[in-house]
Image (tube, rainbow over all chains, first blue to last red; front, side, top):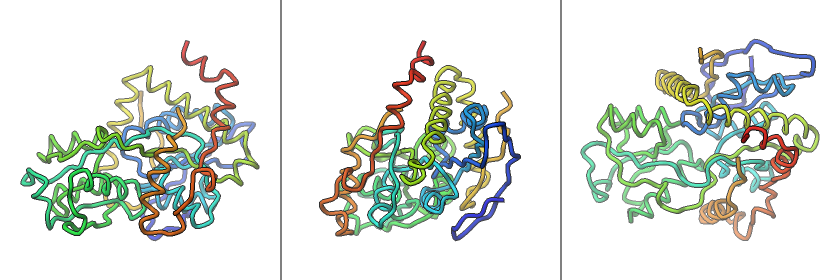
Length: 277
Length: 53
């Protein structure tokens, strides 16, 4: 059982060890905020046992937001975190030694989804807008959205609610009235809950380190071969998805459905063998 | 797989600097935030090219 230094751990599932002749210890890769399609590259590497292929006893953890993932990285509980680069910036400003070794998306792939009764920017006044946590990608991206829409931040209330699936659930039941979400949750929100979109930040032109692979420099220097091999597994996972649309769709479908069934979980681990292809 | 755009890092630094004076004057280099050596090593090994064929 993996222990994390975080406030709330509701579920932690041990994975069956899949050691091979080269594996000496667990190598943990985590998504910090996992319920968007870009994380498919890591899901594919895990599901198809590519970490094992490259000599690592790999585990994958799906954490609802990046903050606990960064805490686990800094505590050496996790070796690679896939989350916003913004968290590396704030961590290093406090003296941490994180570094970004690769990125996935260099823009903000989010739409500001709002309740069906909100039709115009002016309707946002007095409403509650949810972010994951202060300092998260959703926090900074929300600041961008408000600026682009010409909304004074003082005219709305920013609340910390949690990860993507949790925010969608909160928006659907009107606990909040707006939040930024990415695919596939934006489509789900529009189709199932008739949510509107006020702005698509992908079209904003704002450069943004939305998804980055972060490691500790100290770990990289001492274990370079492991990091290189883990990234090989993830890159192969990317090409698997690119060449196997069925696998990509199944991973997205299964993981999104699973995340939405457990939207209140602050920390969760993805169960093995979620893909039956 | 690419490295993050340094403009994105600079954008976040600018946002953080509004509330955190430690961020003022910082750069991706001063915080040692970007290390492209792992991707470079993988690219130079030919690993990525074999998937493009």
